[in-house]
Length: 470
Ligand SMILES: *[C@@H]1O[C@H](CO)[C@@H](O)[C@H](O)[C@H]1NC(C)=O
Ligand SMILES: *[C@@H]1O[C@H](CO)[C@@H](O)[C@H](O)[C@H]1NC(C)=O
Ligand SMILES: *[C@@H]1O[C@H](CO)[C@@H](O)[C@H](O)[C@H]1NC(C)=O
Image (cartoon, rainbow, N blue to C red; front, top):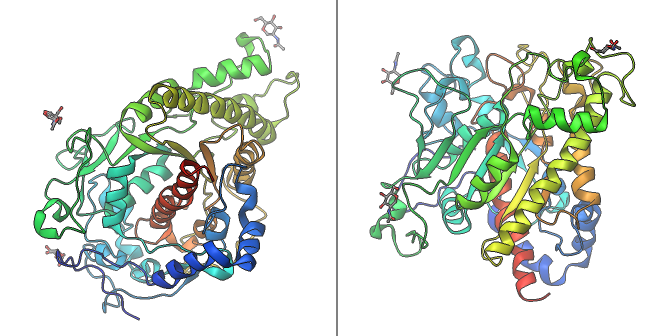
């Protein structure tokens, strides 16, 4: 099967990425009105995600994660990579708007690993009714752009994994977006710089000739040069180090003279008191956060080898870090939900805003072993893992627990357990390490696809039913 994706035809803008679509849309309507069987199968796979005021969706996060990688389905007839510029067409991208570490993100920066092209870029995540997932529309970048313009853009907060997600989004939405800053003129950059995607003034979507059903009309208040469709902020911990030190001190009072929670390890973080106003006033509709990878005993050196012997009630090592993570994320969730309540009170609930916590993704040790050439069918349990990778599921469980068991307490915060597709892709890492994921392999693109679905369909539907008083 050869999918032709790279060609851009202004007259047929709806570029089909993968062929899952229309059947599901039909099934979705059948399901909505008269399918008790599929209703109960959805409930069994996903009902715990929803509080009383949320309708079961047509493809809840866990149902989406039930799928499998199918393929390889090559997009071109080229069997090998001979020029790094081929990375784009192998990945199904027309280009990428971001200029930050371009070849590194696409994993085309090391000729020694070009043999991974085009296979690693040719698998597709396949999910359907049997997984409890119905009504998942194909990724359609023009519709995504429209939804971001109309419903508000995405504020992506997280570490370098999320930065990879931002880069991938800049490819998925190309050529309808432009990216800032431009990293091309000089290679200096600071990881703290915000990165933005704006609607491209030259996008065919803005031309009257694009046809009335395609043409994009900008809502009042939307300024093409100042309203981002997406922004990335590098935030490793979701709270600042000093906020965490204060919280820790209140939980485990220790004499600061002989205790330091953090080591000297580099970390980037800003406070919710800074990014919540940005989210609320910046025209965004969705904030996507993810954290976990930096919550280690090396950064949290107070839990590492210098942990004080008598540490008021705290567990040792990684168990202590995860315990503290739980306290910190509960405190974070309270603060974020309060800010959303306040924003809603001020604007009379005019703009719907939601916060999605994307499950963190651990790496795969030994990912560049030449034997690692394809996706797994099931997650392989490992006895040993680098960093805190073996415990990432516990950090994710913390969020699941906070946002699921207290879903009535945090109605605008949602946990997306969509890490499984990435966990099945040891073959999809960047060339230099086994944590970061290459753009174009379907993992990061799948996050964008699912988040778009979740915001515009799963939440959109319960929003409508709330309006109707259902
Ligand atoms: C690689 O492809 C680009 C774009 O098509 C082209 O400009 C360049 O000359 C090619 N490089 C080589 C070594 O063939
Ligand atoms: C959009 O923002 C720019 C920069 O602030 C400003 O110069 C321009 O007048 C704004 N456009 C509109 C239509 O408000
Ligand atoms: C902690 O520091 C204080 C004051 O600097 C000192 O008196 C105390 O003995 C230290 N405690 C430990 C356990 O090192």
